[in-house]
Length: 352
Image (cartoon, rainbow, N blue to C red; front, top):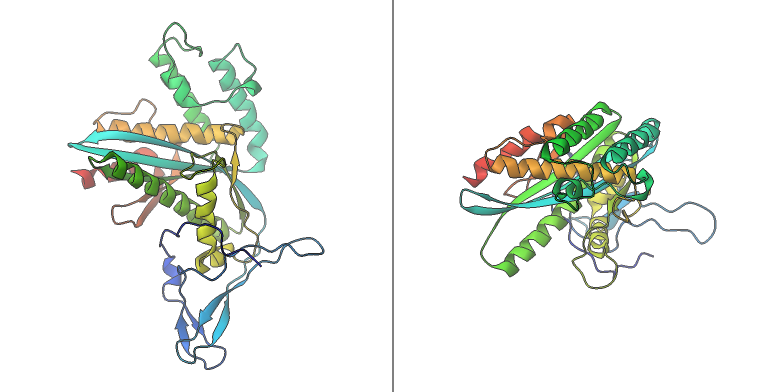
């Protein structure tokens, strides 16, 4: 039996529109009951490894209490046959900007997936870019973090770019590589912007909540997208800075994931297959993490430049259309498949 005493963090409180009017018929009296998709169940939706044999036992129903006869029964969720599993690779970026007298903390998380037919191609292209940036090092021996390239300058610079113009050209070519991989490369960018106050402690708490909620919603939204497209999903992230004590840097993120598993919504989105907990990797240890890092940089940099009324040096529009998803001031989602630079402009009327 799953351990219901693990520490976990609450779900973000968002449901699918298609489920809001869903009811369940009581097996004893036939009463139609509302389903509490977001309330905590007694136990989380966790696959159980059998004592003997292979595979796992997967929950395919959710508990419901009849409002009429008070019977506890189970409601079966729709099962979807999957025709494959995609790995999604994620990295983050953040900025604090000044806009109309307000200090705003912007945070984004990029998740990308790539069809297996293109993996060798992108590895080859990425290695060529890395050779341009560091011709003195074998590409496999260092991690491509574009923030390091962008900030590198002076006589002690490590990268082969004498000035900003050369970095911009490099970044624009990198963005074109990403755009040219579409539609085999799928990109999701989740973002949020909050106004900071004067109290440092309160701001730290608000930023912590901002990041946690965005992480949870990124998992739910991509799980739903993969379900609709009959795909399983395995998430891989650069290690995200922990907000809890202890040695495990991914501790808070796994607590967020467990909080999702306590909901009936997660069982619905899993749709009868095993959904493993997110994996956390050494920063930049996979080539798709390096690509996600670049995309997050472009999005965060774009937000900064838009706040200044300027054009970005490497506007995220150069990446092509991506799945953009933001959390609005009322906590509700807003999403579109469009150029990132256009989507980010939706933030600023709110802050005027």
